[in-house]
Length: 75
Length: 197
Image 1: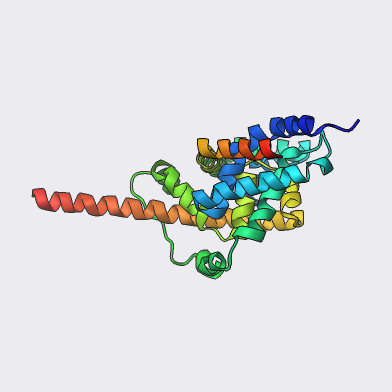
Image 2: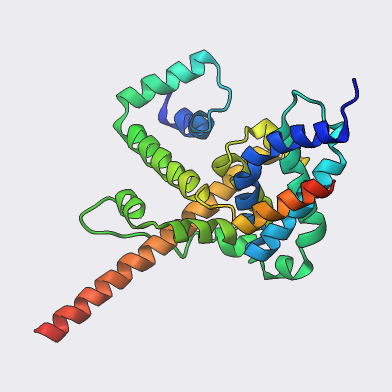
């Protein structure tokens, strides 16, 4: 695997999308050996972790929970 | 054996409650407005219960109710004014206007250090709907590409291409916010030095 192949597969790898065992191993080997790709991977991993973490950080308003309970009670 | 209404309600409620936070925040990202988001969740829940006898127990409830939520949003909330307000893709994808430059740290480190939750939410909510929906479902809510394709009723190849462009757009916006902040800090420092000298 070269750097170009890695860039193509990186998001599949980050997103946990199905890759063959062979592809996964090739990515991990390349990341262990190539500093540039490893830095890119670390940056992308941290960035998308931040997006996920911050995107998930909303609390459901109590009023909405009460509304939903009310709706279900009426079914 | 047929379930009684009360039994159905109980099963529905047990499946629904753990998903409420995710449904609400997704509704928020879609409508960009708390009041609409609450109404949207309520409407989606009502529709979901009405259709619940067609839901096959043991299948993916989460994907099923997200599909109802996104369809309800597109049909009832995504009004013409929202479509008109969205900037064109060409405007958003124009890469010539952006050149990050930082001192001392790598641009990547600077980006990760300066980003706030508000920046991230603002960037997500600025994306045109087709990209926003894919980004929220896969990157925030963790649905697989296949589940996202089913929820939005689009081919998996479309999910992948929208996700790719959505990521690029989101990164571009985040870089812009970060660069603007770093520039403002520099300006403030200059102002402070000039005043004190």
